[in-house]
Image 1 (cartoon, rainbow over the protein chains, first blue to last red):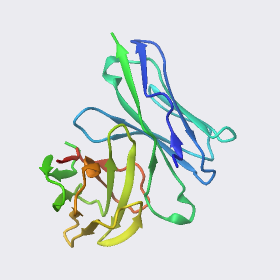
Image 2 (image 1 turned 45 degrees about the vertical axis):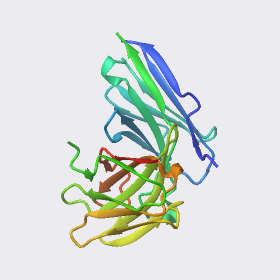
Image 3 (image 1 turned 90 degrees about the vertical axis):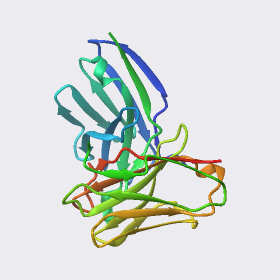
Image 4 (image 1 turned 120 degrees about the vertical axis):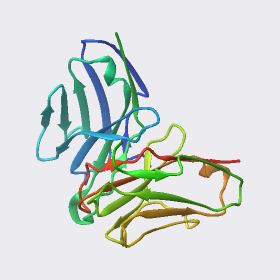
Length: 115
Length: 113
């Protein structure tokens, strides 16, 4: 049962344009969402997060949008740079009563930004 | 260098064998997490330790076990290995047990032949 889904395995965009990565979830108990970026031969690196009490969070070129009614979140990168080429993982947590740091990850989307 | 150290980086072993993966968390971090990433899959949560105690458990196989030692390093033991256990195993650490923006190590690639 895949509770967090990234339906696009790959995405290719031109440098300077917007990259939009999408993520869907099924568990309505999820209340905290994160994006991680992963380069080859490295571990994932935390990028940006959003709590379910918000619908947008921005950090420089990165913005995450959350649509709770649609159980959908997206990561926007503007403008995209070649160094952004990596695998992006969406992750979710049901903090509620679990009181742990456990995350449920999507399968990842490989972003390629062409110069 | 993320500050989380995993050893070894690569491991090739035969079916039926037992291996131990080691993780040293970032200085000051009390919580350690283990994740498994199989081919074309996302990261699957295995287990979390906080200050030496098991905090959360995922779909970890009975053939797998882990522990966190007093110096806070952690070991993941995989026994009776099967071909399907071939994967990348990541360790991550954080200061608190509910901190989600944790720091990952670069992983151990296990190949079972």
